[in-house]
Length: 254
Image (cartoon, rainbow, N blue to C red; front, side):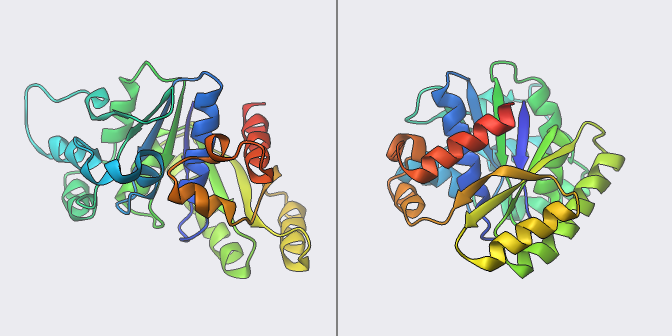
C-alpha cells in the first residue's frame, strides 16, 4: 500500500497525519516507510527529532543522483534511515530540494520516484508527505502511489481549495496514473461544538464527496507530541486524539 497525504493549502496537518498513521501502522507490526518530500522537513523532524538536520543521504541526495549519469545508480533503500520506533523508517527531506526542482522538471524526472518505489519490496506500507503546492514533488508523489488522502481543516478557505485539489488529482489520474484514487477527505482540527465545522462537513457529504467517518480533534497535545518527536501512539496512547488516529487507521485499513 502506497499512500500520499496531499493538499495545496498549508497548515492542514499533512505531516502530522502522515507520521501518526505511519506510527500506528508500524506499531501493528507492519514494515512502514515515510518519505518526506516537503523541503521544510516537518515529518523528518517529527520522527527523527534533532537528528533530522544531519540525516544523510536524504531525498535531495536521491534526486541529485537522478540528475547525474552513472552506470550504477544507488538503490532507493540506501537513502532510508531508521527511526527510534520499531518497524518505522524514513527517507528524510532536505532544504536543497527546492533548488533541485527546476532541474528535475527540465529533465523530466517526474517518474523517478515511482520507478524507485517499484524496486522497494521490504515494506508493507509507504506514506508520503508533500509540500503545500502542486509542484514537481507533489506530482511525483501522486504518480508513485495508488491512494491519496486529503486533509480538510473546516474553514471556508480550505473548502475553496478542496475542489482544486480534487481536480488536480483527477487530472494526474487521467494523464499519468490510472491506479490513483482519492481514498478520502480527512476532517482535521475538528471542533464538534462549533456550528461551522459540522455544517461544512454536512455540505461536503451532501455533495457526495468521500468524507471519512473518523475525525481528528483540535488539541494542544499534538503540538506537545511534535516537540517531543513522538507520534501520539507512542506519546500518549490513551489520549482522545490518539484514539481518533487509531480509528482513522482502522477505517482506512477496512
